[in-house]
Length: 341
Image 1 (cartoon, one colour):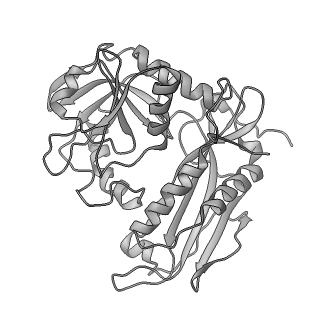
Image 2: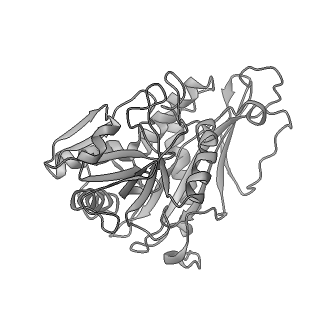
């Protein structure tokens, strides 16, 4: 079959319905066999636990076309492991890791004509998610659940592609100590919606969230981890129990150390240190790594060495190397690339 007739180079980061999605239901203490279906609608009770108490978790990963024409996914086993952690925290049944990876493979295979061609700048975004589906009126976990995985072709996460963005220090909190900031729960993102809409209305691309307990330490944005670069090219990333463990960020730290020979450090990063860094990037599945040009702290601007117009050399090299690994231009560490055959 031929690729779909889509203007791959000009699609945004939005939903486009594709042919098939994977669905599996949990009932009476067990997951069913699961299947690919054509129907993109979800039918649940008006009293479903997900609608009443937001019992839902999700993941995000991508399928790519490599330079030699293969279709691959990047480290889906780590997405599976993170969803296991998320499920346990929200008292949901674990969807087995091997079944998660198999669902990824099946969904990509079924929508192979929607995988954008190499060099288009687009990818096939995969969204696995799980939710409590049966009626629950008292505050308690659901008894029945649905795991679903759909695919949609997407362009760059930030409009305009890879260029420095401007973020602000938010007065809102993303996650509380001992809360759910370390898992990929839908409720975390619902909490961030007002903050991001307010940021956009005031001309900022994203929010920088500080720790809720002391408001002195950098945590993350609404959907990405931070990477900072020191004057001597050390890569520093914030450490906190309320930060989501980004697969992209962990991969970039390995790239920095093993491919670029840079020193890396994961530690608490105090906001007062931010002006001392020469580069800053936001990393996650959707954006890979986006350079931050300026941080606005209630009217006071912190500009990184390259200002608000150019991507810094270290962030640029990190992005170039990781995308090179993903696209098959650079040899990947063992187990990082899952080929879809």
